[in-house]
Amino acid sequence: MTPSGVPDARHNLITGGAGFIGSHLVERLLAQGEHVVVIDDFSTGTQHNLASVANHPKLTVIESNVIECKELSQLVSDSTHVFHLAAAVGVDLVVQSPIRTIETNLKATEAILDAAAPGQTPLLLPSSSEVYGKSAKEGFSETDDLLIGPPTLGRWSYACSKLMDEFLALAFHAERQLPVTVARIFNTVGPRQTGRYGMVLPRFIKAAKAGEPLRVFGDGQQSRCFCHVNDTVEAMARLAMCDHAPGSVFNIGSTEEVTIFSLAKRVIELTGSSSGIELVPYEKAYDVGFEDMQRRKPIIEKLEQFTGFKPATTLDDIIRSTAGLI
Ligand SMILES: NC(=O)c1ccc[n+]([C@@H]2O[C@H](COP(=O)([O-])OP(=O)(O)OC[C@H]3O[C@@H](n4cnc5c(N)ncnc54)[C@H](O)[C@@H]3O)[C@@H](O)[C@H]2O)c1
Image (cartoon, rainbow, N blue to C red; front, top):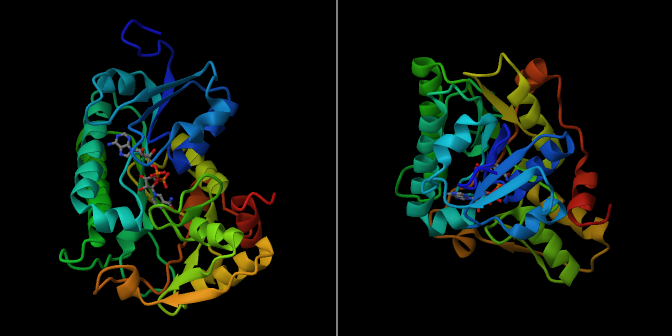
């Protein structure tokens, strides 16, 4: 360590490393023998997420907001790779705190890009399948047009802020030759994801274990593809190492589609729960006028072409793993 607390070895920097996906990425890179530095303000992440590696000699955790981190430039320029996962995430959080969502997602990304540009530090920027908006296509590919709802509906602030991050990242690549890769992540689930901010699978599992009804919003016929966090993290790590990826956008996600109603039934079966299913109108769950998407399925050929990787954990194994049954 240097006197300022900045580690003296070359490292991977993971902003948001105490969050759900970030903590799994931290574990993966440490297991590979890498040095890892985490910057996290613990707004939605926790120390507990990093409990398994808390005393690891190659891990440094800095508790700070990315925007206020005084050592940011040095930490970024000393990095072999930066993974910028810090963001305001989760439908509930986005609907309740749009200012925080927009400011966090725009300002933190801008600060990271500014810090990475002078040394051309390789950067992986997670975006979100939310940017595809409410387009009704069967599968989404990276070059598709995007159909985002109006600014009067706060839920679209997340998609727009992530999309601006993408534009800014690609502009840094084009104008300042920054090796930045954009990863559009689709629904990722697994151990340590919290249901507090509206994530569906942890909510269902918690209710099933407690013998309470699983609350399905709308008619439950909307479908999603759930990807295990280990698969998402593997895809991210491979993209970061791929020389041809910078300047491009990649979908990361599973292609196994399930309706939310079927998901609820599967959770009840696999956990051996006696819970029932309760259909809740969207207006009761969120504000009047809340918009949801019927389908959200990624086309992932590009990811496979560039990295050779295709997520393959089955939905049943994902549910078992998230419920702590395997
Ligand atoms: N989980 C998913 O299904 C999903 C889907 C699409 C995109 N993503 C993206 O993946 C990334 C990680 O998401 P996650 O699901 O792990 O969410 P998360 O909320 O668990 O992780 C975000 C982490 O960032 C930290 N953080 C937030 N603002 C910060 C700031 N200004 N400074 C420092 N730390 C800050 C939080 O404390 C948390 O640890 C995000 O960029 C998110 O947009 C996730």
